[in-house]
Length: 264
Image (cartoon, rainbow, N blue to C red; front, side, top):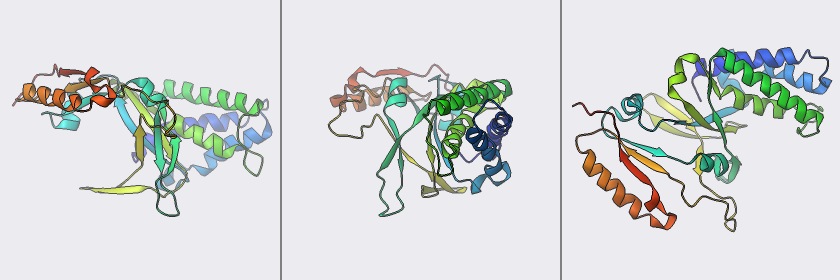
């Protein structure tokens, strides 16, 4: 996530709530220090100097939106792939790049969050974050740092909240995000016209142990074929493609044309 305005929207509200919570005399002093420390460390004016980097894969509740076809497929063609929510939620992992050996073998569970829109919703999310952290700390369920404060855990959970809120103007996107956080700056990069883009590999419907059966046998539920002059041919091509992947029951995937009209 490299949109500074978008991150700042969530950061300002979460920092405000954590700073307010740090003055709550009913909370343990170690937790209050962690709350206050977050606002001090994560300065919104030095976004790219932060300890953490947040990576997201973005999804939409709607599989056939004209704005999506225009924005991501140029208005012609394209495919919208529908994943079951449980697959994204339970079987998705961010793959962290190791410092030594240049190996990609440190997976961590990726968190699926539904984006909340507007300042009121963002404040509710931030307040929920404070209460959840306070309850977990009281129960002894927060990992503490060497100084006795749960600063690292507070920062990680706060980042998930920050990445899960957006300005009210974007509520038509009906967005969900699959989030992974890197605690360092050892990430992959790829080139595009505007320069370099840092990214993290994400595995969907993956399993950490080859002996476990905890994966979904139907990782794709629906494919929508975008508006185009040869849409019927594209539909047939998609049917042929998924039939050739029948080992994972891809033959059960629904394939349908977009209802958006094609204009040449």
